[in-house]
Image (cartoon, rainbow, N blue to C red; front, side, top):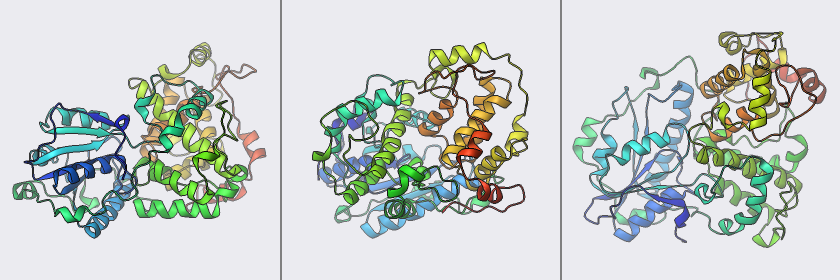
Length: 488
């Protein structure tokens, strides 16, 4: 098993691993899986080197923004999955679902006191940076954060790339060396031989996990969807995509009735499936090796990977665009979700047209309830509310119309982030913020002709969407009186 690359590891304290501790502690926060995980592999390396058992600790707080039964259930599905896997491997797994706000305070510190070393996930957005920074102040033993977000180590770049083309050229120059350093498929293998970690009794007695979601102080008006969370469900989704949809991806990803998209974004967001696992499964199916890569780095969308058209189209979305979102969040931590992250031309044109008359104006309540005059937009919003997902093409239209129907770009951005983060299972994510800000001009160029409200920001209309897509079935499925039915 190859070691975790140094450019994935960020030391958080100056201490070195202490062999007198009871166990190696892996604090699972963003990459909630037990396969293809650099962070878990790093913790396993420490356990083997020290001859100490591994303790996997996964917690779920109730005070994160937009905490809801929908998000909680998806995460808890994964916890149940992880518990089963650890039991099969003979590794101690401790899940903690916080029963009330603040109840988890002190738990990580109590567990870390008995640890040789603590390893956690390095992630650039949502509450994860704050959580890790707070933990740094309370953990005295060796403490490391490990990046397992994408194929490219996110700290290997020194700037935020403005466009997909610019990042694509960079990837084509630098990614090959990283593709040869993938995480172990099963880092838990053999760790049961080191014994089971023993959690102090006072910790188990003081911190008692919640038993029912219905009793938690979270938003129960955003209910769970029919989509099951967890690594096993994510792998099933991946297998289905590769076997049944990949060959149609390039031509049919915008089909609204039977889209050939992967459906992996919720699983990627919660770390139930990782980028390396998806990539490994894809290249195995394609019969691909590094020798298939083109010798050039021109930034072209197609041809560099040396794979089928469907695989190349998927990889441009999965690698280029997904990692573009991560790259922006890493290098612009203060404003990745604000108008300040827009290119100068977009900020200028939106400011120039800020006072333009809006033919239609809707407040947040009307938009959240899908009460606009536009049936396509309303259907997309209902899909988001009912299923926690939204068709990819319609999500772009959804954002453009919110800009058109609210009082300013600032208000539009706030509405988009609120609705997406509240209802979407893949919200609160670098990719989400990249997509939302794209609607306002980020990672794009100026488009003519100049229009009211939009200026030179790319325009989209419901009329052109109706001509482009076959929407009859979609509009029936997500009409005002239809019941929820997910896209398979």
